[in-house]
Image (tube, rainbow, N blue to C red; front, side, top):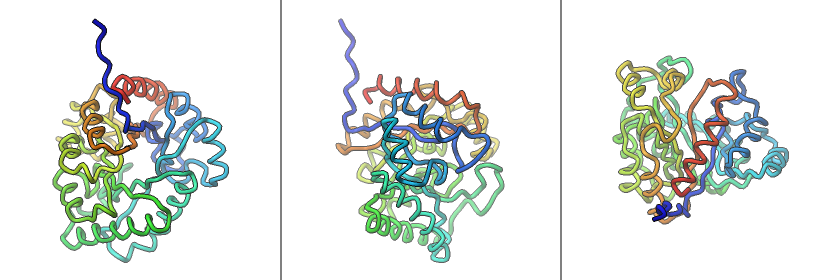
Length: 304
């Protein structure tokens, strides 16, 4: 008897991002050049990409459109970092950063803007920058200003913001993600569920999809190595050094299992991007491509 193939995940659109090539910064000597990323992500079998840190890829939309078009690539989202828990005093600076990113994403035909909260400790050096726990006033500022951001980005650029829970930020654990979602308007704020970061912080991605399905607007596919994770959690290792140790690993070697996550996402009955991100900064330049190609093959075996 011929084994049955997994059901096609017809609502899931797979892509990748500069992050899977070890890119965290607009310009860094430890990162591959942007043209190599574009060449290799296309060769590895991906159609969709994110813009990554603003300034890594060309910011001239005409040039970037030509560079992506000739490689058969399309853009799903841009990415911004915000510190809205600091209140109205940071709005103007935040909006200037957001507007540049959103304008480029819009020009490239993207529909989403991934919003990552600021880190309470530096992701490169591990330096503690502020308290890891927000006050009630800070939570209020974070949620109300994120709603404002969602409205402004929607009205001015036609993009939907998707907020990304992330290790070493204030939106990380199940408790904090739930608190954030419960306090924000679903019409203005959706979630970018990063399976690796959520597992890193103790969360269950399938449970989150089943509980807050209407809030899931975007996915990042990522796995963590449970043995390394246990060590870094026990030692209180910052996220950046944990990544350098290999805490984010190649699927399907880690957790969470991605097949149940994709199945739960498919069951929502909406079109979703699922962007592969394997944090690897810093990494040898020849390391990302073989991993990206094997990961794409694995996801096809899952029906995606």
